[in-house]
Length: 413
Image (cartoon, rainbow, N blue to C red; front, side, top):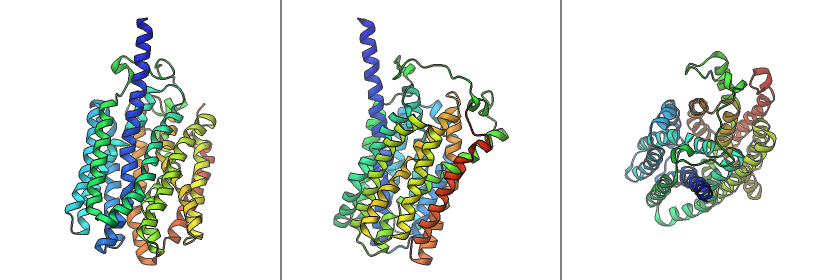
């Protein structure tokens, strides 16, 4: 009888942690996905150009990449509840500080703080799910990340209307407080590993990592990067990080719509359409990944995101097509999930956190100058057409690189 009770308690603990992950990721991506609408509202209200506020995104990406150098070690040494609280505080502070800014360069400060928080945050959900779920990791991680899309779908049009009615400063406060509440609630539920509380993960007991081709690539006995391991990182950099470029551009959709003459509320609705694709993609990717594997799944989704950019480039101004393209563009939010599943496939469990954080850092480094380049091209041309077409070509290139992965030695025996 006591054994049954213990097993039941373990099951409750698994689902409590699962809910904690959902709340955490909802704060991480769901609430913060509204920043694109917020920044566009700031530009419209204060008369800033796109390039004048691009420093926010550039600083955020750069400091996220720098922070990833120490993310794995920090997560190993510190309580997961402390890490979760730190993420919430960074996000909240970065938003609340916006209320006192009066010059474009000041937004760089919020970008720095946000980047530091993001560097801590990206590894946490994957680490927790990898530890607590032995079976169907992709499906459960997809469900966890799906909440961010649902929250974003609901919040973006509401935030756009709230900015119009109450002003962007009040909206920044509302978003900051919401993020903090979700993060602190998640911190009360999260536990890093089942063994920390005497629980059993979903799907059976934890097993010791089995040496694989992926494990040999990671060199279990050392932290040094071998030439072959560097090849793996560069490959992940060139392929999976392609989808991160889609995420970069979702923040510009409100600006894209206003450049076509639509009001900010249309930008909020288009962003809401992106969030529909967001939560749909994450659920679908997890299921598809469990069925056909990480690499083929990446190819499928790269094609979908590339098609979204192609439609936006060719049919900008045709509102029904724009809505459909934005739903497809929402699939770009599976980039973090794709990178997680590819890293799980490439690296053993013992070295996963270190290797995943390095791969994330490489991917982020490729994207940190993108906001400045995008804003500069937009201010120069007054259009996103060339930008979207370039993104489409890069994503289709990613499909080719995945197909060539065997020639690069990135395979599992």
